[in-house]
Image 1 (cartoon, rainbow, N blue to C red):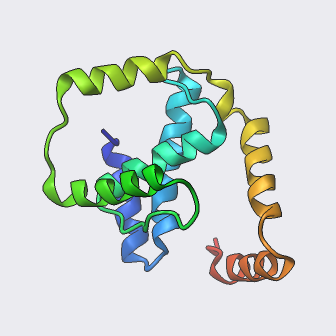
Image 2: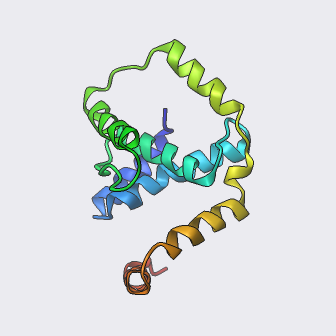
Length: 145
């Protein structure tokens, strides 16, 4: 279950008109924090991000299923979107099993090095034009303080 602060920050992002992926970033940040605290682990930074996205979809963020990836992943993302509307409590047995499985995983996946590596590989998949457009948008929408 995501913390109230993550949900509130995501709603604030939605009110400000930010993209669903930005709203989901709040949940990813929460998952990274949980892994670093040792609440649970993940096999990779990519999995940690996927867990955050799943939480975001369940909390009501309109994040579309990934275009790439296997059919099972896309199906799970669709289910997460549907669950946000139903609000049905998960079974205690299943919830406990998931938590125990995650606790067995490593916490190195949320290290600064692992996250930097993940960001670099994700950026490498994009074209120079896409990276440039993203940088320009970031500069345009940066909070001035």
